[in-house]
Length: 132
Ligand code: THU
Image 1: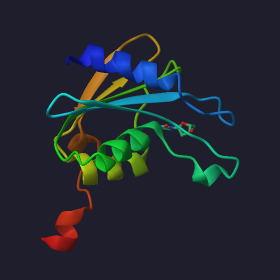
Image 2 (image 1 turned 60 degrees about the vertical axis):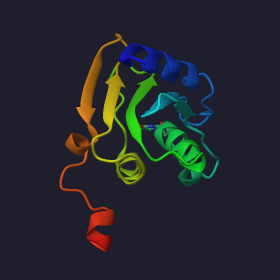
Image 3 (image 1 turned 90 degrees about the vertical axis):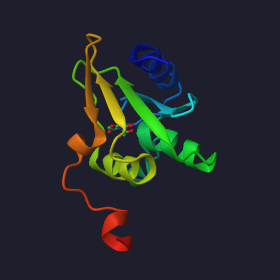
């Protein structure tokens, strides 16, 4: 699966966003090392703090399926600006997917920027601090 195919799957997932409060739809597609894809979309709540981001719905679905080796995540929105994962999602992706995860972010013009998760969350706190 290449980067553009993964982005297409993130766009497909975005259609399932439940975002009546922000009207800001986000889609994610998380690729495992063995080629399976888990899609996610943001799901909001009238109690705003109970909202969950697209990246985390995808990561939690994969975790529930027992996945422990990941390759990449693509993230899309309807915004002109690049959609970059929030701090909480960076922390969760680090824990579940690892710092070598490739993160492909997109903007409305169809441009893509790619990072390693460790570039987006440098000098992180993680399991190494508790178990290592
Ligand atoms: N959101 C995501 O799903 N992912 C991000 O990376 C940033 C923000 C969602 C949360 C909320 O439903 C909406 O976008 C506006 O913040």
